[in-house]
Image: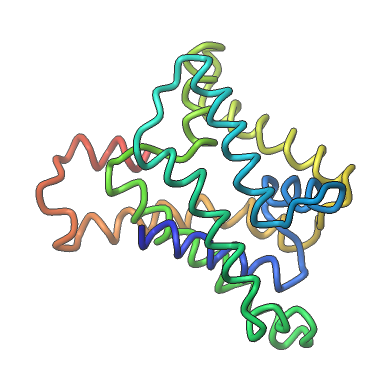
Length: 202
């Protein structure tokens, strides 16, 4: 739960930086612009659709998968309603650039916490895994294809593509990997086997 909340907070920081969103959030924002849905609720709807697609293809969702689909967007909805956070988007670059950096940095520990809990990966990760299994393509190719499709669709709908999008794409992998390495060295990893930690990292 802490990991999912932290993930939602990271997305809000990136959103309020107005410097570009992650590919899936470009799609979420684009959908929000053309529907009655808010950005947070678009996140929930897209996650549920992805979950259903992954499930129909044979990906078995866990409790954490469903919680991810429902709660990350709900946390975003609550956080964007806080005036202190929402008004950060109107500040200068001296505030918004650090906001982007902190947001991307928080994605790492947030992902490590919610996946490390071993209650199931997120909807997009589940779709990535089942897609790789069915197509026999490498996970990186499948994930890249999914991200690119989300980015193109979101951009066409008016989602925010910018330097933050590029920074997210380049930095999120190493940050998440480093966060798993740090988590594996803490008492929180006690009771988790080496094979499970390797599986989580990959």
